[in-house]
Picture 1 (cartoon, rainbow, N blue to C red):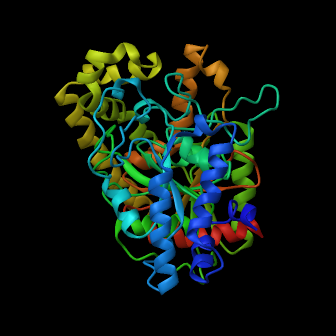
Picture 2 (cartoon, rainbow, N blue to C red):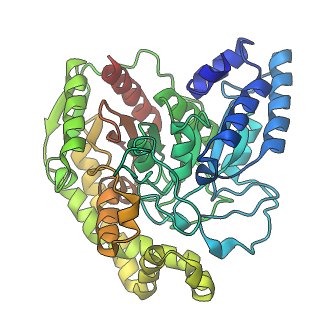
Length: 450
């Protein structure tokens, strides 16, 4: 039976623990053993934390025995992206520039909240360097595998980034869920490319204290997991809120807006076909699909250039000037672009973006969701990304195009797997609209599974 545990949702595992059908200690050992034995272990996990995990599982088992569980996910293991601090460990952030850093003395706040809720920390997962690429290719540390692109000739598909190991840990059944971060798509791209559910939360919903920052105006915390219920429950734990009731969620009468311009421009056939097939299922379940160009998407992209690069340079510039020769040159070049952004240009861009956000909110107020292909392209070849510089730059921007619109507009966004591997359906919602987004997402998830 223990092999079946590895493919269960985090929520179902929690229910089984509550019903005394699964012992958290045995569950944790199953995942630790699987990770330790997996041939891609060192490409997925930067390191495991077995002593911590087993101690936390022991405590969860005692609470389960005495009927004092702290919530649905008490005793359920999770992986954590290696930009979240863990006590006694160096936070790598996917870069060799942190090699001499001192071990951390506190957990990141999101991890501390998860630990207080009884969730078990399995270890830390690989990521794009500094979290500054949507592809997941990292020649400095490790490039995680893609569940859809292993073994077959010519299928060395990128895992998606920057939460590459987080996605791979779940896709390869080495964790029930992984915690990542999303500044421009870093939860949603690996989720889409590895057939998972991923939730980009609203800036400020979950604290980022104790994590390696990339761009403070856009960094968010979010789960990569197997179900919308998991996304809702994990998010609630880290946000310190009640999980939304997903029971009875339906699509009848829901209005879904589909942008016909920016989100589809230059898109490959497979992601578009996957979205259209998914939308047909949503319509069959009672949703009304409306197609209309959304000019604010292009407007947001047009003012974005100074924002994230300037913030990234503010966070990492001094260290890059000292140790930048250790970096993957593509990430270094992208970060160094922020050095040239003036304060006036940065402030003008923010002012313009705030106005765009207001226009967008008014435009979509009558809709229950805005839908798009999560990523307009299929995963590219890692070997080509690392040997063709122009290709890397072009594909990285294309991979991030659809997802980063949600970050620029200050939205929450959910990606769902579709019938086409490596193709996700993304559903935008308003800021702090995670509960409603998960209810619509749960209904869409059921329609896609029908």
